[in-house]
Length: 66
Image 1 (tube, rainbow, N blue to C red):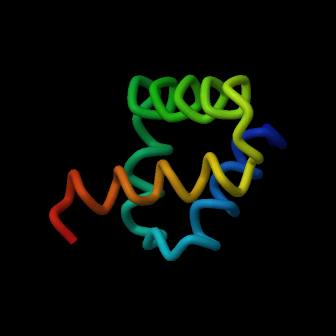
Image 2 (image 1 turned 90 degrees about the vertical axis):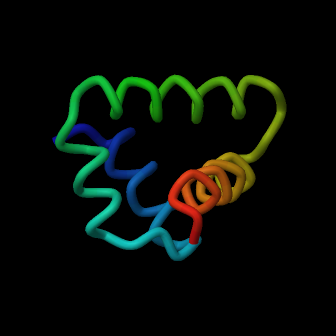
């Protein structure tokens, strides 16, 4: 089990991203790589892990027009 992936998954769930959407992202290696890179880049830019998850969750909702 990849602890970093689990951490990202749980943090995005905390920001109300539905499990069905996350399951779809996490089942596609290409999408998962993009997500992990974005999360790491935000943390490297000074965001907390929660801040990074919040920003990514907003992007997911915007992309899905939710």
